Image (cartoon, rainbow, N blue to C red):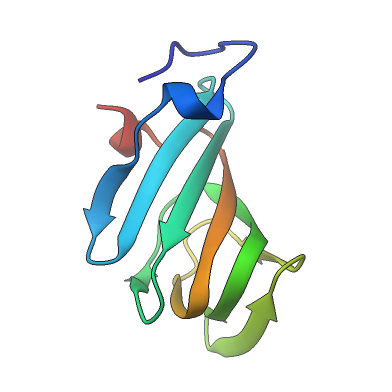
Length: 113
């Protein structure tokens, strides 16, 4: 685990944490106000529908995902971005193995402890 507010984080200094079947994450850096997390998905893995009070933006670094925000679904792939507003149900299904870069405001305390 990294120290909050760490200025530099080397990817190879962190281990992947298994989150669910086919889904793992690395918390790359965070402060109380902001958090950046890598989330790796195997093909057909699911980030189940959920909601939280945090603002979330996610960048599709690699792969292809069916993304649901509220009632709307889109297919997104490498280079695309989605925004999940506070308290709006959202989730993903991985269509081609990939990596999401998630940014949260404020930090997800439930990820840290």
